[in-house]
Image (cartoon, rainbow, N blue to C red; front, side, top):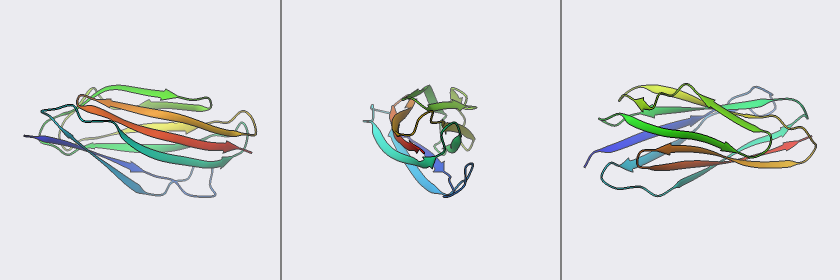
Length: 131
Protein backbone atom coordinates (compact mmCIF):
# COMPACT_ATOMS: atom_id res chain seq x y z
CA UNK A 1 0.00 0.00 0.00
CA UNK A 2 1.50 3.29 -1.06
CA UNK A 3 1.20 6.37 1.12
CA UNK A 4 1.02 9.99 0.14
CA UNK A 5 2.38 12.35 2.74
CA UNK A 6 1.80 16.06 2.58
CA UNK A 7 3.61 18.41 4.91
CA UNK A 8 2.19 21.83 5.64
CA UNK A 9 4.70 24.32 6.93
CA UNK A 10 3.07 27.16 8.79
CA UNK A 11 4.92 30.42 9.20
CA UNK A 12 4.23 33.47 11.36
CA UNK A 13 6.07 36.04 13.50
CA UNK A 14 4.30 37.48 16.51
CA UNK A 15 3.98 41.26 16.67
CA UNK A 16 4.47 41.80 12.92
CA UNK A 17 1.74 42.38 10.39
CA UNK A 18 3.29 40.27 7.63
CA UNK A 19 5.32 38.01 9.90
CA UNK A 20 6.19 34.32 9.88
CA UNK A 21 7.20 31.50 12.39
CA UNK A 22 7.26 27.74 11.90
CA UNK A 23 5.15 24.72 12.77
CA UNK A 24 4.82 21.52 10.76
CA UNK A 25 1.59 19.66 10.05
CA UNK A 26 1.96 16.23 8.42
CA UNK A 27 -0.87 14.50 6.63
CA UNK A 28 -0.74 10.79 5.81
CA UNK A 29 -3.36 9.48 3.45
CA UNK A 30 -3.46 5.82 2.35
CA UNK A 31 -4.21 5.37 -1.35
CA UNK A 32 -6.38 2.28 -0.78
CA UNK A 33 -9.04 3.89 1.40
CA UNK A 34 -10.58 7.25 2.14
CA UNK A 35 -8.91 8.80 5.16
CA UNK A 36 -10.98 10.71 7.67
CA UNK A 37 -10.81 14.46 8.03
CA UNK A 38 -7.71 15.82 9.74
CA UNK A 39 -8.14 19.02 11.76
CA UNK A 40 -5.61 21.72 12.60
CA UNK A 41 -5.78 25.23 14.08
CA UNK A 42 -4.14 28.51 13.14
CA UNK A 43 -4.59 31.78 15.06
CA UNK A 44 -3.72 35.04 13.30
CA UNK A 45 -3.83 36.85 16.65
CA UNK A 46 -4.82 40.50 16.87
CA UNK A 47 -4.90 42.56 13.70
CA UNK A 48 -5.86 46.19 13.24
CA UNK A 49 -9.19 46.76 11.47
CA UNK A 50 -8.70 47.11 7.70
CA UNK A 51 -5.16 45.69 7.96
CA UNK A 52 -4.15 42.35 6.53
CA UNK A 53 -2.13 39.39 7.82
CA UNK A 54 -1.31 36.27 5.90
CA UNK A 55 0.13 32.82 6.46
CA UNK A 56 1.65 30.55 3.83
CA UNK A 57 1.03 26.81 4.08
CA UNK A 58 3.62 24.93 2.03
CA UNK A 59 2.29 21.63 0.71
CA UNK A 60 4.98 19.08 -0.15
CA UNK A 61 4.33 15.85 -2.04
CA UNK A 62 6.66 13.34 -0.40
CA UNK A 63 5.04 10.09 -1.52
CA UNK A 64 6.01 8.03 -4.55
CA UNK A 65 2.92 9.03 -6.51
CA UNK A 66 1.43 12.49 -7.20
CA UNK A 67 -0.58 14.25 -4.50
CA UNK A 68 -4.07 14.94 -5.87
CA UNK A 69 -5.54 18.26 -4.67
CA UNK A 70 -9.22 18.20 -5.61
CA UNK A 71 -10.38 21.47 -4.07
CA UNK A 72 -9.33 24.46 -2.00
CA UNK A 73 -12.08 26.15 -0.02
CA UNK A 74 -12.39 28.86 2.60
CA UNK A 75 -15.25 29.82 4.89
CA UNK A 76 -15.70 32.72 7.29
CA UNK A 77 -15.93 36.50 7.11
CA UNK A 78 -12.55 38.28 6.87
CA UNK A 79 -10.69 35.21 5.51
CA UNK A 80 -9.53 34.49 1.98
CA UNK A 81 -7.24 31.92 0.37
CA UNK A 82 -5.52 31.22 -2.91
CA UNK A 83 -2.92 28.79 -4.18
CA UNK A 84 -0.39 28.04 -6.87
CA UNK A 85 -0.90 24.29 -6.33
CA UNK A 86 -1.69 22.21 -9.40
CA UNK A 87 -4.39 19.52 -9.26
CA UNK A 88 -1.65 16.88 -9.38
CA UNK A 89 1.54 17.67 -7.46
CA UNK A 90 4.43 15.36 -8.51
CA UNK A 91 6.49 13.63 -5.81
CA UNK A 92 9.16 15.89 -4.32
CA UNK A 93 7.44 19.09 -5.48
CA UNK A 94 6.04 21.91 -3.35
CA UNK A 95 3.29 24.47 -3.71
CA UNK A 96 1.84 27.21 -1.52
CA UNK A 97 -1.60 27.92 -0.09
CA UNK A 98 -1.87 31.47 1.28
CA UNK A 99 -4.61 32.32 3.77
CA UNK A 100 -5.29 35.97 4.60
CA UNK A 101 -7.09 37.63 7.50
CA UNK A 102 -8.53 41.10 6.91
CA UNK A 103 -10.90 42.19 9.71
CA UNK A 104 -13.43 44.93 9.03
CA UNK A 105 -14.67 45.33 12.64
CA UNK A 106 -13.36 45.15 16.19
CA UNK A 107 -14.42 41.62 17.11
CA UNK A 108 -13.38 37.95 17.05
CA UNK A 109 -13.51 35.98 13.80
CA UNK A 110 -13.38 32.31 12.95
CA UNK A 111 -13.27 30.44 9.67
CA UNK A 112 -12.02 27.28 7.98
CA UNK A 113 -9.55 26.47 5.25
CA UNK A 114 -10.34 23.22 3.40
CA UNK A 115 -7.76 21.24 1.46
CA UNK A 116 -9.57 18.37 -0.24
CA UNK A 117 -7.24 15.62 -1.42
CA UNK A 118 -8.11 12.49 -3.40
CA UNK A 119 -8.13 10.43 -0.19
CA UNK A 120 -9.36 12.81 2.50
CA UNK A 121 -9.50 16.40 3.70
CA UNK A 122 -7.31 18.59 5.84
CA UNK A 123 -9.30 21.28 7.60
CA UNK A 124 -7.54 24.18 9.27
CA UNK A 125 -9.67 26.14 11.74
CA UNK A 126 -8.76 29.82 11.48
CA UNK A 127 -9.07 32.43 14.21
CA UNK A 128 -8.29 36.12 14.52
CA UNK A 129 -9.35 39.28 16.31
CA UNK A 130 -9.90 42.73 14.83
CA UNK A 131 -8.66 45.51 17.08
